[in-house]
Length: 275
Ligand SMILES: NC(=O)C1=CN([C@@H]2O[C@H](COP(=O)(O)OP(=O)(O)OC[C@H]3O[C@@H](n4cnc5c(N)ncnc54)[C@H](OP(=O)(O)O)[C@@H]3O)[C@@H](O)[C@H]2O)C=CC1
Ligand SMILES: O=C(O)[C@@H]1CCC=N1
Image (cartoon, rainbow, N blue to C red; front, side, top):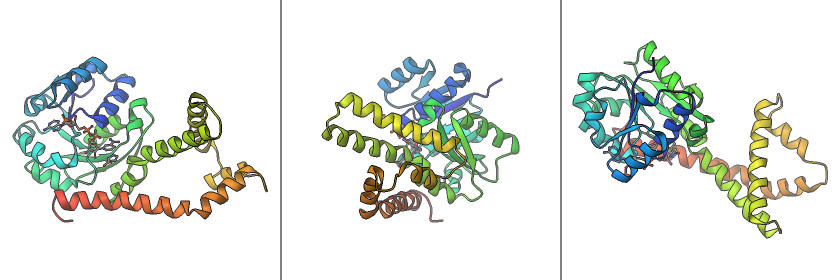
C-alpha cells in the first residue's frame, strides 16, 4: 500500500513530481497538495485528479510524507506554521528547496524531525528526472527507502554523503534543464536564420538533444570521444567546435555552474543560519 503524500506548494516542481508519481502508477487518492491560490488548486485538481487544500496544517494531518515544495524565501514561515502538526503527526519531511539546509528546516519545524533534503528537476514530470538526496540523522532506514521510492518514480536518484554536495547537484541537474533549454532555444533561432522554418528548426534541435543524451547514456564511450566521432578532420563540426572553444565555452559553463552553486550557499546563509 502506498504512503500518503502531501505536497506543500503546488507549483512547477511539485507538479512535475506529482505527474511523475502518477505516471509510475502511484495511487492518486494517496497524493494531495496545498496552495494559497484557488485557481492553482483547481488547475492541479483538474490536471492530476488529486485533492488540493488551502490550509497546510489541515492537509498534513493525515500525511505519512510531507514534501516541502515552496520557494526557499517562503520556507521558514511555512515550516513554522505547520510545526505543531509535524510534531504531533511526525511525518517524514522531504524538502526540494534549493540551498536551505536540513538543520534550519529541522529548527523551524520544532526539532527532532526526519528530513530528507533533495534536489530534483522538472523532467520528473516525464519520469526522466534526476534527484540528489541527503538524509539528516533523524531519518530511519525505512524512511530513507520511502524517500528513494518516491523520487525514483520520477527518474534516477543519487544519495550524497555530505549535505553541501546538494548545492553542486543543484548547479548540475537541478538548474541543468534550463541550460539545455537555453541551448536548444539558441540553436532553433540560428537554424531559422540559416533558412529553416520554425517547425523544422524546433524538431531537429530537440531530436538532436534527445539523440545525443540517449546515445551518451547507452554508449561505453565518454562524451569527449563521442564528440570527436562527430568531428571530421577539417569538416563542418570542427569549425563549429573551434568557434565554441575560441569563445571560451568551457569557462562560460564553469562560471555559470559556480554562480548557481554560490547562489545556493547564499540562499542558505540569507534565509537560514550560517553553516
Ligand atoms: N522549478 C525547478 O526546476 C526546481 C525547483 N526546486 C525547488 O522547488 C521549490 C518550488 O519551486 P517552483 O515549483 O519552481 O516554484 P513555484 O513558485 O512554481 O511553486 C511554489 C508554489 O508554492 C505556493 N505557495 C506559496 N506560499 C505558500 C504557502 N504558504 N503554502 C503553500 N504553498 C505556498 C506558490 O503559490 P503562489 O504562486 O500562489 O504564491 C506556488 O504555487 C523551490 O524551493 C525550488 O528551489 C528544486 C528543483 C528544481
Ligand atoms: O532556480 C532555482 O532556484 C531552482 C532550483 C533549481 C532549479 N530551479
